Length: 239
Ligand code: URA
Image (cartoon, rainbow, N blue to C red; front, side, top):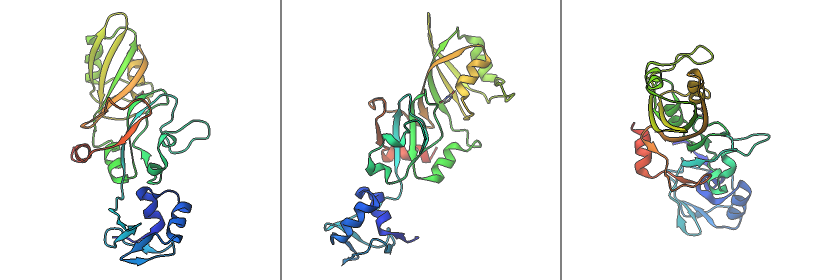
């Protein structure tokens, strides 16, 4: 395993910014393999060396996996000049892992967003070849019926000429307003909105409710997040 700077490791473990970690080390609170260290630039092997802070041995964790219920008006990016980002919603102890959103939800889309610093998992979930299903709940302006179910099943042509892969449309409510669930296995830009546009209807509200085998925890309020459980992570990884 690669060596890593001790201040980076402690940062990842939630001990705060590099500056804060430097003070913790200067204060003589950190030992590596039983020896007190005074420099924050030393390199250690997090899986082999024993790191202690205030006498407690650290259990090292390299990756973080977060489920967020993304609210509207927040962008799925790590940085933005104008808007608040999903990273801004994280506590510093989670920001130090430098997570990024797995794919994007539009600024006005709510719901399940995974954030991680595990590039491999992110790549697998986003790879067009893997066809990871994503299910959305949406409110639609315009009547939705069997014809749309059939069209989405066959694939519809988007405004740029792209023909979508088969998608599953379920009509949940059909009176004065229409509520639906749509499962797609790809992730084109504004895909759900553009699919409805292609059949002459407008999405007025959009929320992602699942990705692969992972469903949004309905106990999470908008803007809230939590780390994935081991079981949820297995579901994502072994899909
Ligand atoms: N499809 C959309 O149109 N928007 C999203 O945010 C996600 C899927």
